[in-house]
Length: 532
Image (cartoon, rainbow, N blue to C red; front, side, top):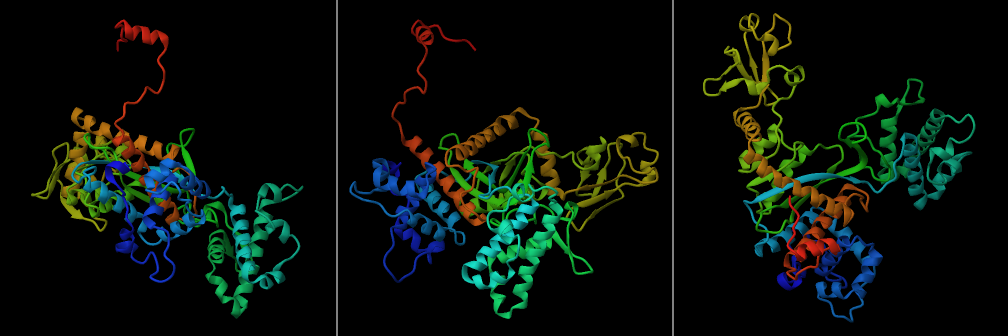
């Protein structure tokens, strides 16, 4: 790749745009950022730690060749990589880094706009252990005490009482704290709640301790106490029931990563997946005459559905001048707003669309696709031939279509149309004309052989996800926080590009991965080939 493309990054790239304030104007010059970017990408390509990466820079000839270093170069200290990532995690520098790489690849003719791209998501586990409710609360209080004790140990000493060392002296584990005879989980939760309340009350009572409210762990502590406890009229704390907790999208699952969320996907049972962490959406080009390269990496919270990622991904592709002509997605991505936004951008979505949704689909009755809409006349015809009496837009952007009960009551196929009370007419809700027409057309097209042939290319993104998981280790986040996790995901996407560019430019003949058996060699030698 280096022989064909030369350096992908130069130091001047990190003095303009999003990277303009990445380094100070004064002080000793730092190590080349162009060098550190390539080292970091190679680190994720081989899934190495910072220390092993620093050793590889000093020892591996292949790395020195790819980085353009002299054989005598001794490299740098491992701590440099951590400091460099801290600079990259600020703002949108992670996305800007991928954009910089794609500009070089676009100039080399390896990616282009107007082609075909595909997107899929996978779950990413947070860099925290899984905690139950009591452990989460106990860990939050322990983390807050540790953070305060780091700078003001004298403030913590008056709060310490019997049992505090056992509960918060080391990591909180209910298996340890509840192993005593007659131990109660509810009493332990109430005790932890009272201990946390005493800490926050001490902070509120001391004017000189107001600065502690700005500590990250103290903020998390207060938020968790609001989520899990309720102050009664008598002033005592009540441990909330599970049904009273906020939804999973708002609920903190670990005080050590307040942005990690619990989510599930799949049908409940053996095939379902549940995790605490985030989601990574990978997009790649899939033109037949070019290598498949990652064009975007989008990171969201675990509870955000895939449908929310379509427009942001397309916006970033357009900003990179890589707008796809066709965008292949699975059934979790398309929606009415996404279809409308793609139409405005001139992007053709190729994805399974379920038009039969809502109450009609559940009851087995007629759905919007069974009705003919005359948009110019502003009327809708039902399967029995009756005409609607109104088509009115709603506040949520949908259009409400109503039919007269005088037509619906004696209709011979009423049981196939609605399960409403006999004195009511059929009412349905449809999208505005462009979206409704596009949804109906997409559902019609997805039953054709041509559509199935085009959609078959989407399956390749599954291999990309597998490569990211098995190689660079995308499944588990190395760092805490959504911004750092996103940086890891972007670097993983760049590492995949490096791997594929190397394979693209490696034209040397390869030996077969597995040595043939003697029987197979004899059959090949004598022209006896296997039949399909």
